[in-house]
Amino acid sequence: MKTILWATLTANGNYAQSGPENPPKKESLDDFATHAKAAGNFIIGRRTFEGMRGSGGPGPGPFADIDIVVVSNNASEIPGVTVVRSTQEALSYLQQKGHQTALISGGADIHNSFLGQGLVDEVIFNVAPVLEGKGLNLLIDKANYRYKHVQLLDCKPLGGGVVQLRYAIDR
Image 1 (tube, rainbow, N blue to C red):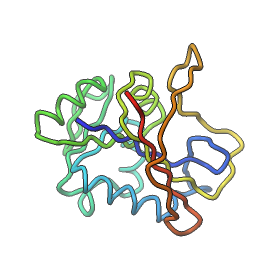
Image 2 (cartoon, rainbow, N blue to C red):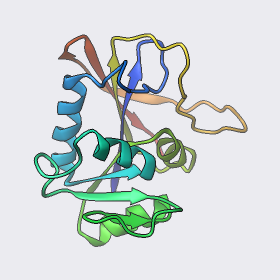
Image 3 (cartoon, one colour):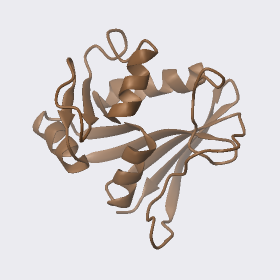
């Protein structure tokens, strides 16, 4: 199964933290919905899912026919989504459902877990036109600070100052 990690970064390279003072750009949200529809699914952390739900999504609309998989050690059941305990369980579930691609969509912990385990084939970074003083980083190896070379597949403007970078990762 092909795994694609989708994230929004700030112009200074931090993992973008959205909130009332810095809402996500419409162009990034529309792009996420497009990728989720194409994959037919997305994997998300519980806290990020709850944040999305609190802001009016995910729910009916663009995610009505999409398999949403929430990775959580705490939640046992969330109506309308599948809850799993691990990254491997999330991928196994989507494979059993017949998906060819898994979209990893949210939460720095989820992203870092997939990256740290070497489970990502491709990354899509939407770079938002904002500088963030304090942010989180995407990490491939917390202990050894190793490098992982990637191959640029595409680079395009999405509008609103958002630029998308798409890279392949050799696993």
